[in-house]
Image (cartoon, rainbow, N blue to C red):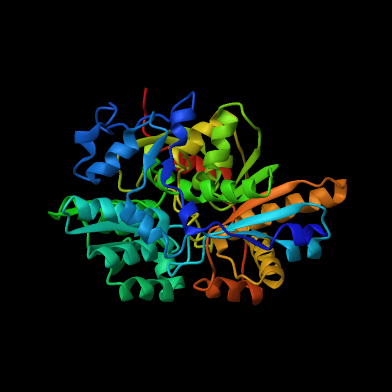
Length: 458
């Protein structure tokens, strides 16, 4: 029997195998991620400090470094059943096209209406807001995947939603914007003239295309000035990586069914939600000394927080109204070029992933935009799925690693995260196909300027 007959194209779990608990990788970290601190006092922020901004139950999850597993409420698991478990796919056609002895698998998170993995945390955060009796939520979105997912979750639970969408994405991705509005969300390009912070940013940076840091500032301002609202974030925070652990838990369960042990796990990295969720149970094994894996974070060369940033306390937003987080950062006032990296345009990285990277448990590489879209088209033509630009960063490095195996003859097993589909990203594909796409890499001077504004924390 051929290997292709032994390992199916798609490895499915059944709905009873959807995880019943989220896994908190912090419980197994010897060095815990540094706490959020107050920008004025530089003291760690506790539950009461965060209550004006975040939902109560989410704050508890955010601050808990020791509980390894959190029960997933049945209502959330019932919602997950609409699109989970998601398939783990063996990329036989891509392997054949590359002529590689490597075995390539991808966890596909685009099989839901929102089109990405973001729904895993969106429904959880909306659920806790609803249980708290809130009227609505505010948020930011870059590529639009998080805003789409949260608008779907809020519609399902009857919550109002106000979305601030990074201006360049608002203009590049009108259809993503319209999906959000179809679900009932209001969508505002950021920076806007609707908030004090938005007006200030526009005055200081005329004609700016915006950033996730700008949009976060505006969303927080609206949440804290409107009774019955709270702010929620789609990446970076500990609570988000906790919810996204369903990705990695399902991936590991599917691999275990066939006795498959990956050599490397690859994920795109913007703020860290997809990568953190995908690697969580594997990283847990690595932290406990049970197994070893090569874990690779892939980020855009235009926004290289891991590979060229500084590990330091920084504001989570451009308006400097949020807590300080210790993370790999390019500076909160760093505004990336108007490229098509979409959701990978945040100036910083998850404190959890930042600590793991600093401690040497994972590595990071940056890739340029045109090479990412070359990989995306290669994948689309062989595997039949049009990948999101964000996911395509992981595809680029998975292909590169598979080609190294071809050169060396090694039969390594590669697993990467396919975070979502690219059907709302056709303007980017058009520019690539028309030869109009360019690569922009910030200079050392650009980064030095933004890093010079880092707050001084003892």
